[in-house]
Image (cartoon, rainbow, N blue to C red; front, side, top):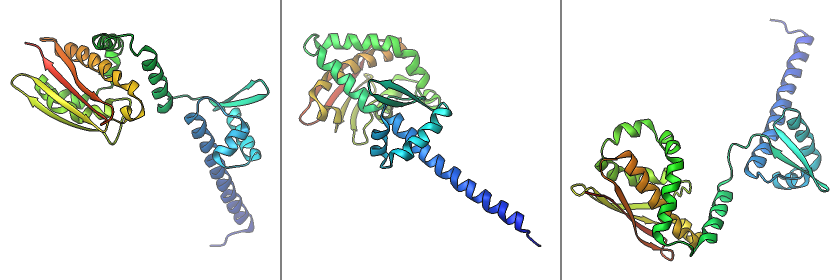
Length: 242
């Protein structure tokens, strides 16, 4: 089969265009990812240093992204900051720092039971959301309080917003009395700051209210048995009242 010179030219042009488009997408994705992970906004200089590129290259692709409505800019003083137009999440370190600041600010103002009351209030506002996020397949498996006690330690690490791969949960369940003790080890929040000790009293309040709503026949009492910041451990008991 004969291939004319024009067809060869078209083929080469197509290949060059695909390479150009691929290169453009790579740079655009780099910039978008960087901006989404740093929602406070960046100048062209900041972006160039963060992505290890030149200001000319960054400026070129920012112009394209702005035209596509994927990036927005704002002049603040003598600076022009660029932001992702699609803020689907807030970086976890920012949430953690903000939450730690709240815990630090209210430290000493409440006793442990009052921290649990805060957890009750949080549960009232988050209950529908939490139930909606809970996997449907898991709901069909956890049909009793006893089954919940035996599975809680397995799925809890993945539900906590401060997920840690290093977290270990050992537990002892008394099925007859419908109570259990959970021993959390390698709790890295406690390694960051002692302010997070009260996080677990708030968590106890959330668990009490949620479980009392899911299993309404008898209320649940969740008790923090110990919090050891030095050893990074927490012990929690969950007890269904008779």
